[in-house]
Image (tube, rainbow, N blue to C red; front, side):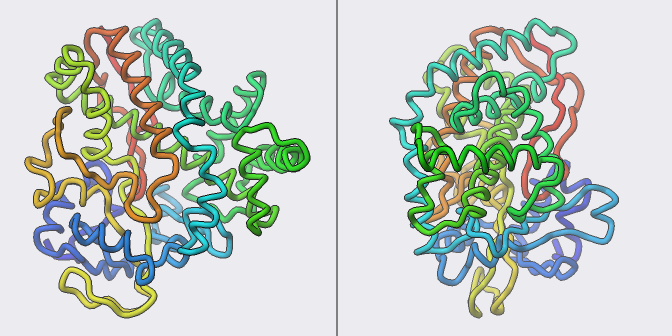
Length: 398
């Protein structure tokens, strides 16, 4: 494939990027997409090199990048990551990144998350029970995949149960505005959420309560401004909801397409964790993220100039046949499975353990309450080359 023939914003590519990835990976694994002025990395080995080589491939510079076209505002297709000038964990480089990461990490340790496990099981069982009861009206995105991470994160943030529905509305507004860019200064109609976070952060500074907001508030001790503390809240919320929701919907689609995988999981429940890992590899919820070169460099036989915009295609790397035998098959017992759906190196997703827990709990509840799962129609996919999932996923359950 010629790089000129590959358009990450083409509706056909967005609907099914994997055949286009394969063609590009075989012919131009590090491709210069001139129409978008970016270099796209599709091979596993090259992707890992970029993610781990932070001195040459900067997140701080890269995450201020934009991909779009003249038609993007009208079509809604495109994606912007305008986080320049704000020290958000995803948009910083070492050593600054490690400072912020260490400050926030206490909320995401195994011990911290185990305390949430009972609540997760109760919530998943409640949501799945409601999904089954809706019968022909069941929509897995609306009824399970979207509310599950919102309520879990609300609990982590210390939001009282009486506010969970309001919090869910705030989150839906903010995630819907992702294509308008995130700069930490404001999120349009999500101002009520910003006011809530600002007020609660001030309270936690004087009276910490052990929740996620208390951990973020304490990050002022490492030099984060009030504005930057607020930015961490918004980023962790959006990233936590978007990734987990997409992973859940992609997993259900994969199970619907592969009934033999459902049968295997029902007979061998010890494979639940392995199935979650395969869903992450097979249809990655985050398809790509940005970096930018700090100096001229060589990658995959290509010469990249300084300040080159680089799009690391996790979704393509996770289907690389040089790393994963039979990569286009969904195998719930795949081993080894060293995918990079959560990144690699210093920026390995801080919330990966949380996402895995949530998805495994939901999958168990779903398998316990059903005998089979299938999609009712094609559903509606996200329209972004960066994140991949469903925004509507009608299902039939038996």
